[in-house]
Length: 539
Image (cartoon, rainbow, N blue to C red; front, side, top):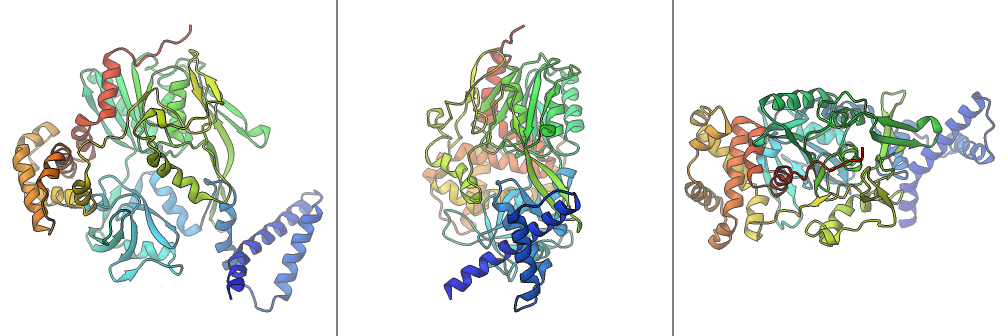
């Protein structure tokens, strides 16, 4: 029985390979090329299966399920997107998203939340990236029989309607339940743009989408008119997107004829070198770019160009390490292959793609967790760099390839105030829920605020706010542990204020409050004010 099950698992992949061989054979013959013996052999096997197999095969269904398996045996970033999924997959980069405000994927028969859209319904309810949704209402979302379309059908619904989701969260023994009110979720690629300190503009970029460059430019020039003569570009958590916006954005900060990025593919026609054109008006302002372990792809192109040209400082933690470029190929049924066709190289010549084993995507994604386990996010000395792959910036500084962008100034993960009791409160969603309910009860008064400063004046002092939160925690069945609550006091109060501000004024107000105690932002301000954010470059 086990042998038969094993054969059943591999039949779709084999059929896909055979079909691919048959199509390739047809292409070769039509193009006048000579097919190899192996290609002819595979095509013949496919023909025999189609004609002689005991049961009639629905080849469309077989291939639809097999192509993703085929892509998984390439690299971790080559993917197949069905026609039904294609429009949704493009929505985020095109600037719109609807539903409960999450991105998910099905992994190991579970619905895994890979991203919670900032400010969206799920974010307000307290869902987190990494959560596994096991049920929506009375419908179970686990098992091999659940398709992505079924999941979307259960999570979507009319604006204003609600759905209760049951969630399993790593490290939490109980199933968590969240009631989420569905809403339209507009996607903006710029979360915040404001003056972080005197003369220092801060811009938070969450993705590189179709409209990111014009939006970025508008904010850049707007703050410059307000008096910003130095900038912090926050790319933490930005997993990438389109390459062109990143190139155009970094062009604003580079002098003419500076290398931005180079690409190399299998064919020489895929190779290119992109240079700055000298039209940027900010090529001499002090600049800091913030990155972390979730900054990937286009974020690494941007930060790599700044670092390798010695144009500014990179602050934070080592980036993800995605140095592969995908191209979209539309298939006849409107589905799509996003196939890796190039590697990209930073101006110093390094490829920052981290190691991977073909067909083992799970280990590839788990590498981020391994960084936490061996302490990389806490101490720079724990970072595993390929010191044999040495490259030099324009000013002669050593940088390394093969595993992300290592910042010039390391800032560890901020764990101040994080203890077991705090994690229990966060995992239960009590911090988010209190903030939302507080706004709901006091909305008329809070809506009088026209700015973050005015809103903070309307809120009670820290002790009163924390006391109200403590009562809320007790009412929700959690035993108060005052020592740990006081230990987390500063963190909890800051988060409560930031979440209240977000619900009243929007996501920018959240960052205006949260960044006041963010170690990476404070370090960036310090570096700019000390004069270290412009690295000397050779003439």
